[in-house]
Length: 100
Figure 1 (cartoon, rainbow, N blue to C red):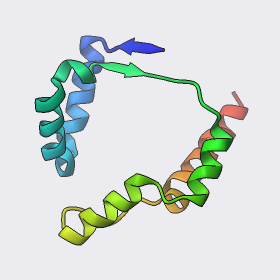
Figure 2: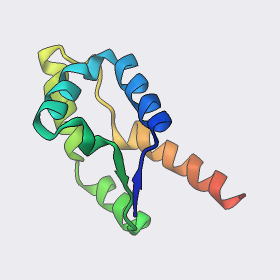
Figure 3: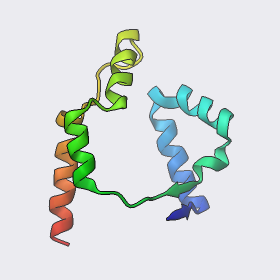
Figure 4: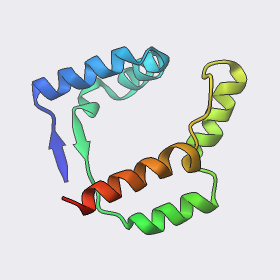
């Protein structure tokens, strides 16, 4: 499913991007490489959540390895980890969704 962002939603996304100063250089490079239009569409694809979670529990996700490199250079202050940060969030969302 593809969702084209309204101008209001796009402005909210841009405001959120600009509030996260740690990502501004990466965002600028992405905008230059792909154009802003590429980020005005959200693409949602079905997937098997449990299979994805099992795989992430076994293999280190790319973003952890990338984060470790960025911490080593001083660009980031800490690494976002699947087990510490994302798995608890996914569990909370799953629990919330089950009550809806």
